[in-house]
Length: 216
Image 1 (cartoon, one colour):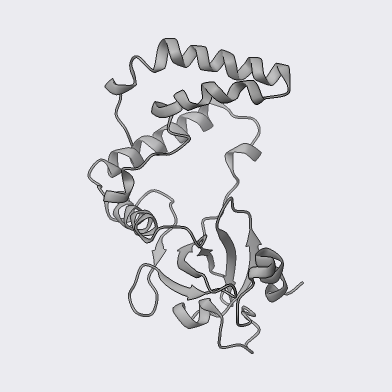
Image 2 (cartoon, rainbow, N blue to C red):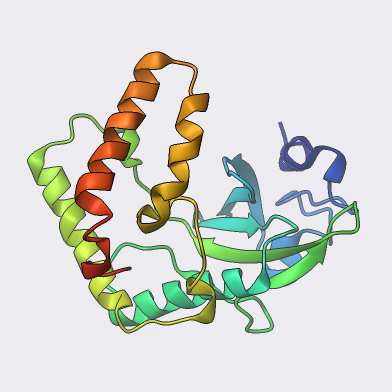
């Protein structure tokens, strides 16, 4: 299956107004070519709201092209790009993806989808590896290494600030009180009991003390 077909499957009715056949050399409309002068093959990646594609150039270098949801705010993308740039400067030893500027030197840009919506597009270097959920076993050495990595990243971000970083998120544990009214909707009784046990634990131990903890 070629990359154009992958894009069509991913976007469905909202496929690009123009064809974007990554890497076949026949199209001038590819965002990788237009924005980054990049010839590459593409493979669709999973994403909750946004559309992501792993690109592989002819010389074997890997990239991730991120095509954001139409409702995604520009300030939110700017915050992510600048946070990664900050980490690249303050903690260059950490194996993190790098933001790649387009041909105009911009961190991200926009393109038009078939439904008329504007999509923000940005490019990252691809980091090879295995996600933690697929690694077995979770040894103490592995978890210790992960903790050190997160500690170094958190320390490097202490000097980073951005207006878009101050926003409400459903998974923000300091604001998890909203969960209480929705526990009753969990049909599986065992799962409901598990969530209730965590809820009561957080109510007793976490909510009274979270303001004394640092926020990343």
